[in-house]
Every structure is written in structure tokens, then in C-alpha cells.
Image 1 (cartoon, rainbow, N blue to C red):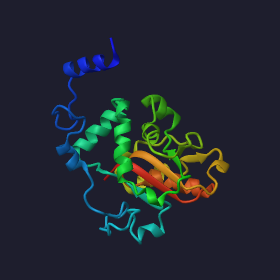
Image 2: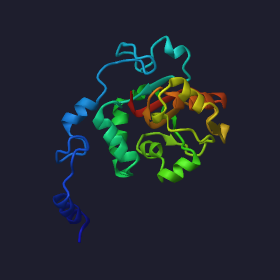
Image 3: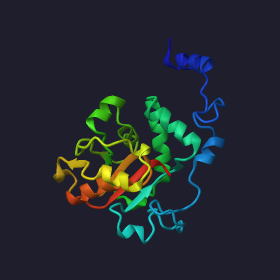
Image 4: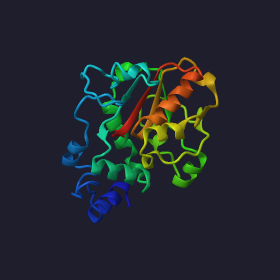
Amino acid sequence: MPYKVIHTILDLLFPVRCLGCRKANAHICPSCLLHMQRKNSECFFCGVKINKSVLNNICSQCIRKSPLSGIWWPWHYQNETTKKVITAYKYRRKKWLAPALSAYIKNAMDMGLLPSDSIIIPVPLSQSRQVERGFNQAELLADNLPFEILRSVAIKVKDTPQQARTHSKNERIDHMRDAFLIKNPSAILGRTILLVDDVATTGATLCELAKTLKNAGSGLVYAAVLAHG
């Protein structure tokens, strides 16, 4: 039976439903997507409102102490549909969502800040977390973005608690200290790097990895995630 016929039958038997409101015909319906989207321009770190012309989403005060030169995100994590989508993707292993989720990330980015020879480093998982989950959600998101990907340069050497379950910012920072190791510094020497992950709350993970990369000789480090908040 031809591939398209099989999928037509499956669509009739099991219609696509919005992961948020369960209405048919879209994985994320227009109404839910509207509420998920980031609407204001604010600093990633302190939340102060910034001019839309500030393309890196970090205010002039925070940029002075941030190892990140910029960060982009399309969705608010505190939105219930956002949480349902990310839970379905990451914990219920709906890996087929990755290309669509990557498209939302790409649309939120300002590509003009990234040189064409930039490299992507997906935020690595510890070995035990990778085995437990079965895949690295950041890697699948990175696969659909238009830059070279380096998967094995940065490794996570510390098995930290899940950041989403740690409420204190200082605790998150302490958990992530010395969590990463750069195996092949020559591969990132002087290069502009884009870190990719699914969720960033305080940015402790991204900042620790950015610091580790810069200490190993990288150029500017940016980040792109699906949701923040």
C-alpha cells in the first residue's frame, strides 16, 4: 500500500489534535500558539523591558557580566500549552515534533548576528540522563538549524539534578559549576558558537557551558532555546 495512502488512513482514524486544547487538525492550534508566544522585548536575565532594536535580548547592565553575547526564545515556559508540548517532546518521546519546534526557534533568532561559519553545540546531557531518556532533545532541535553541529566537543561530566526542579537561582548555579568539559579545544578555537536547548529558566546551564567554552578559547557564544520563563 502506498505511503501516502497509509498516512491518509491513519489521519482519518487518529486525527491530529492540538497538544494544548485537543482541537483537531494541528499539533499546536493558532489560538494556543498565540498565547504561547513571547510578546514583549525583555532582558533574558533580569526581565527589564528593552527596546526591540536590542537584538541580543540582554540589557546593557546584564551583558557586562554575562558569558552569553545573546539569546533567543519564541515561547513563554509558564504557559500551560508550552509545558504540554515540551513534555510530549522530551518525556513522552514524540521526537517527530523536533523539525517544527526548530522552526519556531529559528524564526525567533536574528541570524544577522551570527557569522555563516558559526557552529552549533547542543547542550549535552550526562551519560546517565542520556541513557534514561534515550535521546538528547537539544541535538534533535539542532539538527534542523542551518549551521554545522559539533556533538562530542562538549561533554557533561557532572550528573546534576534536573534544573526545572531546582527553584533557587543560586542552587542552580552551584549545581552547574564545573559540569562541562571541552574534549577538543582546537575545534572551537576562535569560533562563534550557538548553544541550543529546549528550556532555559535562569540560564545557569547555558552560562556555565558558555564560560567553559570561552575559557577553552572559543569566540562569542550565543544561545537559542524553545522556551524561557
